[in-house]
Image (cartoon, rainbow, N blue to C red; front, side):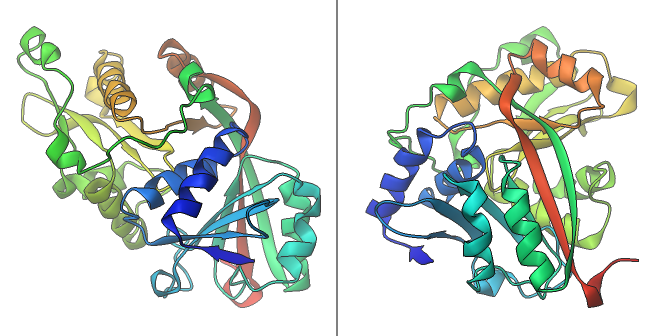
Amino acid sequence: MILLNNSHKLLALYKSLARSIPESLKVYGSVYHINHGNPFNMEVLVDSWPEYQMVIIRPQKQEMTDDMDLYTNVYHMFSKEPQKSQEVLKNCEIINWKQRLQIQGLQESLGEGIRAAALSKSVKVEHSTAVLLVTEDILKLNASNKSKFGSWAETGHPDDDFESETPNFKYAQLAVSYSGLVNDNWKRGQNERSLRFIKRCIEDLPAACMLGPEGVPVSWVTMDPSCEVGMAYSMEKYRRTGNMARVMMRYMKYLRQKNIPFYLSVREENEYSRRYVGQLGFFEASCEWHQWICYPQNLVPF
């Protein structure tokens, strides 16, 4: 595999990946953030260049110092020929199979190669899926990459109309001081490693909330290093009041203004959330969201 660290090549890759959306969205979103400051210190590897078949995004080596950190040890993967991913994964040292890690992608057929490579390293694999949800404009993405990302904190918000309509609630940037609140209410979190991950997401990527009458968030949403929108939550007292819808609409408006790609995933059994995001303009993509969690024998959690 070839490390792609030239800005012109990364821009060319970004534009090329747009032609494979939605299957490429995980790596497309990752390359977006890499091209705009690379706040999570990720790196891009391809099997060849300029013609490529496979792209793998991973954290730089200095990031992956904790063998147990499933929030940091994350690989995003896309292949034009996913059935051939096995030979690439088995014959290279791209993945550190000695760690607990997760691989995310939007192609189910990547799984065969991942499982075969993991088996050859005596690594246990757990596979899970979710529904991938996108908006129409994401499928028609302009891959010019001309948007200036800048700082989320410095950019401000698109409008203040909502504040005048509901004086007890205020749309705002989600402050990093509320990382603990987000962590406590994230089903995949609630531990120290997830708290560190959430802090980085809030500090370095777009995150928004609705502040309630007491001045603390009652609804919020964040983004991960692959441009996936997630961790969305409303406190029980404020559910079904329209707060989350208002946060999402303002948040999506901001992302569109800045030409930041976005998408989300919902578990198939979560019918309420699927209907809810459908009302916000999301619809099910032609491919699914996939996650492969990998455990070396000495780190299997049971």
